[in-house]
Length: 284
Ligand code: SF4
Image 1 (cartoon, rainbow, N blue to C red):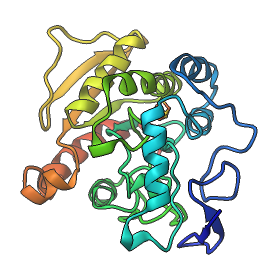
Image 2: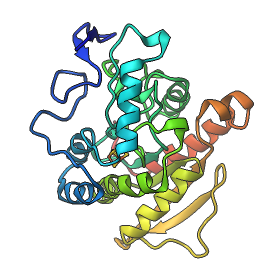
Image 3: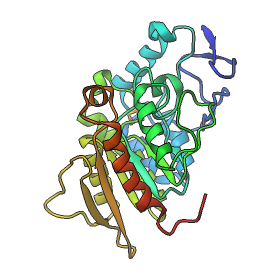
């Protein structure tokens, strides 16, 4: 099995990366239970006690055969410009605070971004956009997200993907979305006491957030709020406070290179998210 040096640490790794082999930020090890079908995903997600436990278990998940094959194929074949480095090739755990006030919901990791670096929004242009924006809004400690050992810290914020494996053409199947949703449900359950705002990056994330909120027992307005850039919906958690769902066009290269999403548009939304997240929060 070929091993290549990690671009930051120099430690050699196989692709895909075995759990517990020392990859920066790897939450799993050889004893982490593995889900092989949607029922096992639901059981392991339900019994997870912390977001990091959700992260560890989801990062070794093998419930969707098409996505397992794709993520590992990409990890083995690699893009030419990254041919000299190892690929993570596993599902991507949530990133950021264990007690977040803002939960950012994306879509799925990119084949040569998160699937390569092992971290959400890391190592590609989407990461440059969202992490840069979070930094300008005071929610990230640095403006860049290059690799999993770059020291990135989020403030008040956690980022999760409704689908945790890189899908072909960035298009998960409905069955894959449905299988993966138990991991999102579990994260929402575990952060529900802290979170004040959900930021949905794109229509897929908006629908996933509303579905997860409904399954968590939160009241979702009827008719269902429609996605749009800077759209908002108030979700009543039933615990005596509301959570605001905010929409933004996704930070995909397709949106940012065509001007559908500009830096000013993103900054406007992230300022709103930061205001909602930090109102009454202890300083960090
Ligand atoms: S998409 Fe989600 S449920 Fe499917 S294999 Fe990946 S982590 Fe598991």
